[in-house]
Image 1 (tube, rainbow, N blue to C red):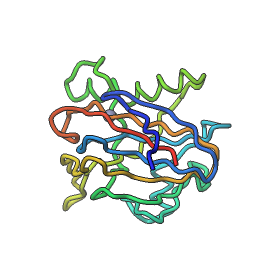
Image 2 (image 1 turned 30 degrees about the vertical axis):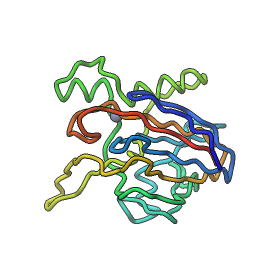
Image 3 (image 1 turned 180 degrees about the vertical axis):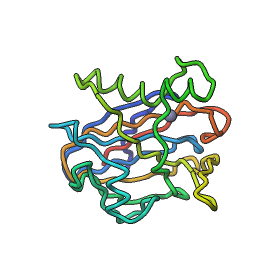
Image 4 (image 1 turned 90 degrees about the horizontal axis):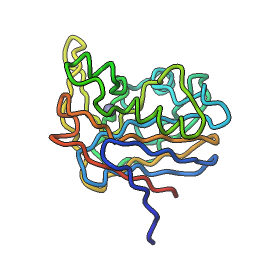
Length: 197
Ligand SMILES: [Zn+2]
């Protein structure tokens, strides 16, 4: 069966609508690429997939297939259905942003996941006061002794995917992270893909 694949060009984001119980695959088309992912309730974007609430709901810092992930109001918003990648999708880092690039000594106008998110939501008439922490799919961050956070290049292989199932009517935003800080996506940012099931 051939399935339509929506391309997420390198350094940019795509937004898609999901109905309740609809599934999405976020595909690491070229391998090694971090994809910052957000899920917002479509009828009220002030409710969204929350990393801190989902860590509490699952008692994990790295979610696993079978986990029920929740919103900032502790409502189940997506379930984590499947993962063909080596996993450990980071839940701790904020999205890269004009401020983060300035902080790390890059140009402030560097493309960023935060600006990508704001721009695709702006096209839908949604303006965010606060940018939630993304789910950093395919980002490999580890916790070392003493609580030290370590970034390492993504181990995702070409074609690896994460599959989610919406529990509400939502908009999912995926940003192919433009960052080269910490080498999280290897030497050069690449694109990714989305399949709706
Ligand atoms: Zn980013």
